[in-house]
Length: 385
Image (cartoon, rainbow, N blue to C red; front, side):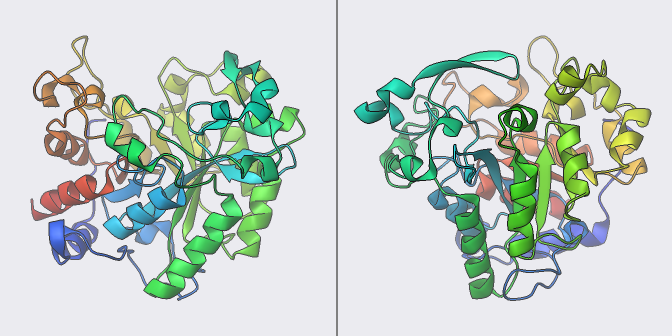
């Protein structure tokens, strides 16, 4: 995205002061959150008060702990992440649990439970055939007998040390954790909550939006200034939630040729390329406050995987009052643009600071990161100029 809109100096300076004034490794033992919040973590948490660039703990601190566990969330918060992300899928009995996908094969030890061997099945989820075990086929009590494990052990072998340590958390448990941490820290703990495959689950009679709204109201995170942001790859999910709660909303955007699955089901021919045009962004702004684009929509890569010239998405989105929180930065070479990889080991760390600076210079408002401590240090470097 070219024609860059730079973050307001005051907000960038605020981030610099927060990060530079911390302890060992440039990070504090408590999360920094812009603005003043109430001790119970309710209200006074407007997302527009967030520092720029905002650092979002992607599935917690998933570069260091198995994703979507209380251990991962706690570490992200302790590292100083401004927001901690949860992805939500339902159980058979309608509870919302935190998993990146409803296919729990790779993130739990379900395959080691002979009592669930018969639950292995093949399903079509958003047009993709998947074989494994799925959250919607288990009651919450059954899921609680499982333990989380590292999703990509070949890349993150050290994370396997924590396999089996944590169970699958419910979103209500995460809300209680956030409220408790907010009281302890004297400022709200912000949550970034994604509805996963909402059309698919609605078709099963397990709609996500209504139970999510109920939980948000119960924990005082249903207002426009609540310390929470909602997100989905399906715009209709955010439109539905806009009628249920005032919590800020973000539409996630994947590759330019992709179509949101709710568009596929509704026969809407628009693609992501249509949604990132000025007209598409104007439409998004009618029910959401931001977008979460794939990084390649901000700065495309060439055939060799190197960064090219930024697009105008940042300027176009800002012109319509939308914040941009792209995804996802990771430290390992295999995930970085080719010009920031170092050495030949795909699992070794590359020049992630250089890559983050390139994206920050494009004018984005924040970024999802598996390694929040790294992103915070990069944001501090950027704040110094």
